Length: 152
Image (tube, rainbow, N blue to C red; front, side, top):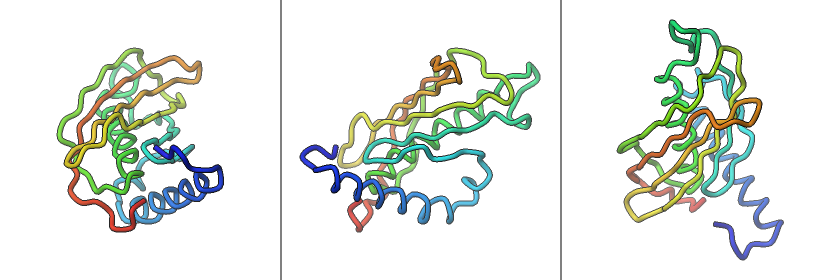
């Protein structure tokens, strides 16, 4: 991914990906406007986002709900697919909840494309807490609905 590119070409590619994701997806999908996340890095096959566990995302035990974590994981992995220029939908998702996440925690989500096929994309996601401990690991398969004509 991006092999054989010089630094300027890679920066230009990352800039195009950034603009594509932030303008074409975030501004057009109301769902993403509701999630408290910040983009940290977007490049081909990689999406890194940071988000905070706000009180409305915790369960009765005072920790982050597994459902909201699955939703964030799906979003991070979907963004990694979108950096390839694909319009995708989730086929299946597998989640491993490794450590509890308390309210007000800041989480770094890293989504990486493992394999890009002609019809599907396999992606993994890892969430890290402020102490850089792995707290959630997910993997999903996405179906490619359409490839972007812009060729991001």
